[in-house]
Length: 384
Image (cartoon, rainbow, N blue to C red):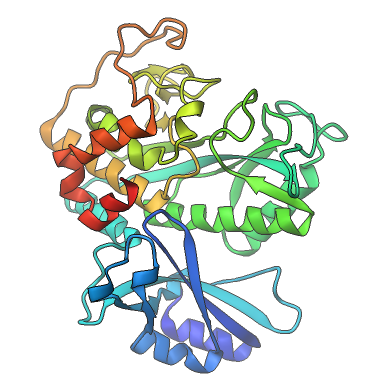
């Protein structure tokens, strides 16, 4: 845990030249403003003003002045910008000019969801698996033709993944494992369980680092759900655990999954991936069953894997709606459907399915009382 005083002392003693104050629009796109060390104390105390009307989901010109205040606990050094003095980055909390927390800040929405879980005595942890392709820059040509868990020389992404993981470790983001995935030029990097806010912060840092490292190697990192028509898509599998009531928590998610799919799969291409090659579309769960929407590794395991989300999702908002759905399941003691051991993509006729298109997902979210309760109007409008 870093305090304001810790950060100010670090900046003074370690030759920090720039501070990047980062935040996110409602779609999860990272934004930032850079300040000089001389302005950091003021940023902590009174904040940095910016024009919210130009930011997706914040764009109310009659109420556009917003304030950024850096969160000292998110301070990290950028390892690729340290030649002439350090550059550090902090994620920011967004405020209205009256000092109130900004309700369309999805990072704030996640904090609220986590607090509700704590108030109910529920502790939640999230771990992610991220898939992405590496293409030759400016093309859709994969950097190699390797397959699942292949090694060099077939796997040409080994050094790039190593560089990504080294940078992440230097930024206090610890990957658990990395390997070549099934598609040509496709890679996967996995992370252990964290508090949901930390997991979302790390997800944002991860995507930024991957794109930066890829570019420095003459490559393009592509996180889109279906970059190549005839190859596996990219997922963002979420491993979720709770300290109690896991079955009711999962039942709540499955009950609301159709209504919240828009926030887990927010792109048109998201629906080209679902139903294809280990990207389940039928609402189901099973033990060690990767054709089911939710996989529990074994009987007695205290975690489950949700396999539908993709990397277009804003992790802050995705975790928010999942947490509220799970907590609703606990509050109502929703009964979990029976598990299945079938290959559901071959025989899924008895199961309900996720929305089959972005338009269907928008329709379900726009008519959902649950979504409107937890997703602010301006945020929802940005997805519709």
